[in-house]
Length: 113
Ligand SMILES: [Zn+2]
Image (cartoon, rainbow, N blue to C red):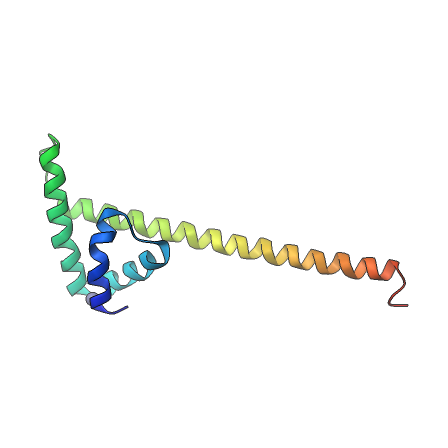
């Protein structure tokens, strides 16, 4: 992902509109790119400020909030990855047992001998 692409995803990210695939790439880029990290921080700060206007909270901990948010996203991606691995394992198992069942069926019909 290029910086340009990442910058375009900053707003959707903050609004929580990012699809999982994009989110994963975005997080990866943010982790390795200081410029985009700063960009995200600026947008996040603005967004946070606006939301603060609507609430009575008076503790401004933007950096902490952003870290929390990023951590949440990372966990979301991790859970998704685990799910994909599990799904792959189940799919593989199903395919294998289908093969075994087919072979046994063919044996019963005397196809192999
Ligand atoms: Zn970048």
